[in-house]
Image (cartoon, rainbow, N blue to C red; front, side):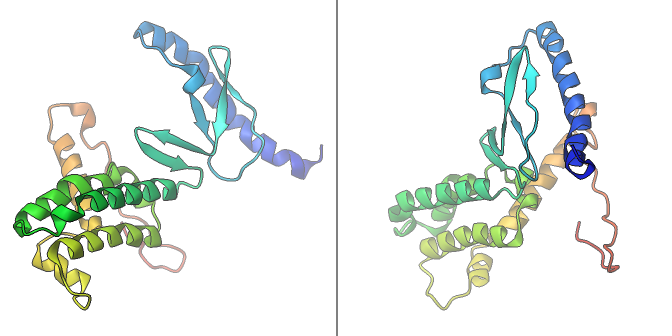
Length: 219
């Protein structure tokens, strides 16, 4: 084996060995706390370039490597761009809006229709979004925002020449990005001021250093 071809394998050995050592210690911890793991349903996520990676083992069984997994309802892909999760959230929002269109276009008070949108459509669109929205590209974020724009246009009956930001301003509804930021901030504030001291300052916010051009990166 030549040196160039051996470098990728060598680069994998160290983290794989560390992972395997953790998996070797895991059964003792699981038995101590009387917890069980279905090894047959346990998978490992491969991030980055697809290469041949030796399998990991837990309780004598091989753990399958995959390029995408679903964890707590979130679809995580190997690029960590969260495009599959965004597509799923968009499809869920579209389906809910299609079912609720008779309600959204009815003569119900606008306040009631907004409550219906927040409860049944936005909740599906923004499921667990504070955890994955920051990984999305600007294009993906725009696609998500479009779903809210369409819903607001349907429930208000606004004309085609009315701007989306004007509709959102009139109904006093924040953008998806602002909603996610507010939700995340409230969640962290609740943890920082809660009785569980181990959750205090669990995700500190640090100013990002400037890039090579000297331009400060957004936080």
